[in-house]
Amino acid sequence: AATFYACFKLRSVAFPEGLREIGASAFYACDSLTQVILPNGLETLGAAAFAACRALESVELPSTLQTIPTQAFNGCAALRKIATPDDLREIGSGAFDGCAALAEISFPDGLQTLGTSAFSGCRSLRSVAVPSGVKTLELGVFSGCQALTSVALSNGVLTVDDEAFSGCAALTEISLPTTLRTLGFYAFGGCKSLSSLVLPPSLAEIDDYALFGCSPDLTLCGKSGSVAEKFAAQNGFR
Image (tube, rainbow, N blue to C red; front, side, top):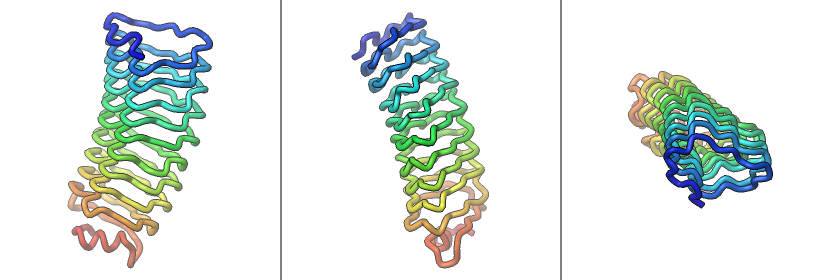
């Protein structure tokens, strides 16, 4: 672990064939590192392995990697491009938190977990499509993504947790699944550009502050007699 911690002048790395594991914080704060190509066969990437590599622009992940761990690329402010492998199952808490230049990300169909604040503060991220295997959008997962305009949640998603999309001020389009059961505290708080939102009849719980800070002109669409209709009436939405 922390093998090359804060090697500020390290610009490139060639990984050997047969490498199976990179330890926690192995390349933490290697400020001159600009590109990482991880070798096929790599199975384990340690927490914060490339965190705070502020010059890192692109990362290639191998098909053998199933988990991007906690804070793996946290604070990589120059990271613009990352291709996720088809067999990826989990993106851990804070994995890409603060990757301000990251403009796009695609998730494989088999993804199951998006951790707390995984993409928080990705200020250049424009759109997100979450696959059906992800059941819960965790706390703050896409919070502060100021350029995010479009969100599509596939059928299968059950919960949008607290602050999941809070502060996404440019968000204009959200597609909520018919499987959705819960909207948490400040789930879409401060999403000031939303003009309408369809709330599916599957919703059983909507926190009173789920849409706090949204436009007062926001129109909510839901079935008569539903939890959505009750929420709209109690919180002054049309």
